Length: 497
Image 1 (cartoon, rainbow, N blue to C red):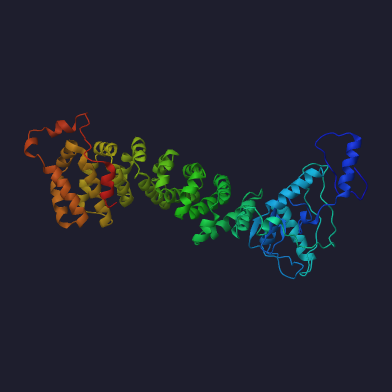
Image 2: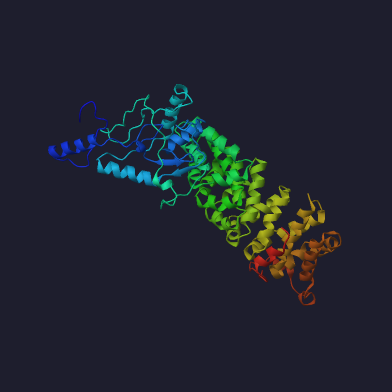
């Protein structure tokens, strides 16, 4: 390819004649690589140049590696390099690519983060704080074996004074300043994509700690790139990776602005898989994440469509109290949407929930879900068939509730069922509802009293005309006599649950 003085091995896109090949080699040899194309740290032609606050251009991952290792090279003017702002240098990148095409040089390839980090680690112990000398690049500019990086001696200091045109106020480039968070996000993403499990784990633990308390950090780090990496790690077969990935996602989901973004990233299906068969602690976090994401109205239908309802219902029987509670809360918020109510009823949710009520298990939260189901025609029919009226009247008669709010939820559920027409009236009469409700009308809260009075009105209206009705025959009939008298949305809005 040339003499020992040749700095580059040139690879051609075509197979030219010997005369043309000699001409191209001569052109390249006579045109040295412009210094402003070379990263002051790696010594390579920059593939992804960025400009930092101090006005100098570097290869992007070299900047990230410096930030990661807390290394600030000293500039010729005596000031330390300022990496607080990183701006893509599109003009310089375009100039470099044009130069490579013109001189028949393969376009440079970006240096990966870990290779850049190795270069920085070699610089730190060898160089005094007063200067930064170029080092040979450890990464080839091109993927071809025929291309090598320029070899510049360690003792040849290069001035860090390149200021590309796009940085000046006269530039026509519209560059968005990404700020300090870009380096933070980039570093996390690179480590999370590492092939080393311990590095992935360290990055996840760091992300989990960073997003635990600071709202600003949660907003800043909820990016598509980071969510994409978390999505893959949530499905990891390593417990430490899966647990910390789902826990970090829970933290990110706490911010309202992040909830829709997370669901749209496609991360719900992996969460559902974890809830079905992940590690125990991961299932705790997965239930919490689905609960958190279900708080946003825009997510409710999507989460139901993606298949979260069956595993959430199953999780109500989990050995973990945390999983049970968060699953119940997720179901409550998801059941505010009619399409999810219909799905839950088809999945047998009424039988499951009424069974939990009868056993006294998680009574308060289960009653909240049943309140929502009772607000729809399908839910009322299933609950009337499942013995909900007798169950609720029995609870009110016993008066054993964990809180006044749970008692009121029981009244609200009955209030929803009271729109079930003659079927409800027959079941309520058989259960002795009127006597129980009359007592509650005197002792309950004001909100409960209003609903109790409404239920009593339903039981008492047209009383004389219905004296000849055979209630036992009516209750044993296979015909569905329930009729919807008002829209579910209105009743849900008027209830206190």
